[in-house]
Image (cartoon, rainbow, N blue to C red):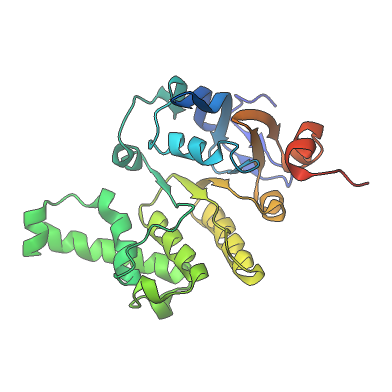
Length: 272
């Protein structure tokens, strides 16, 4: 089936939709340093798409291009069939793209509930004055957004800590709260930057389950960076592999696993 077909069938028989986002000949430079060099790949509706590679391969830079934090010097970002102009990250968020960060970016002095509520900012239409008065439409909007946040808190099983300041939480729960905040934005495309980093085995199992549930129950398209190859191969429908800013592999987990260039650069020596 061609890359541009409207439907794609995964290794386990799941049907994935047409192309949601296309990264076309992306090149990103920082002064004389080339972080990304002429990379192209796409992300399809409803899939879990992994971006992997050794440290310094340019993975986070690519995620920053997708989310609008960086603007490439060359190439195009095409979102739902339209070339995306340069725009600030909050404008990208308004298009339905949300993300988590490699280093947790939460408000540590605020409660879990309040942190997750910040994810609803792109859905708040009333002005600051109306919100301060908490009357009429502002009150209705607040109630509606609170209900949405409570649904996500229940979904991610963090009801017991909803009033706890984030700064008092262990690392694994902080990562789950950050996921909750991203989901509160109701993204069509969710970007996860090393969601398993620093977690123990049990925490990784929980996070893997939640990622699969988000994809399955919400229909959210997910692009993730992850170093745990077991997690990548278990979760992903397709994998793109980067090394020194170049793309060296792109395909299903089995195709990537058997790609000799990927093995040499990242996975180590192949074993029979």
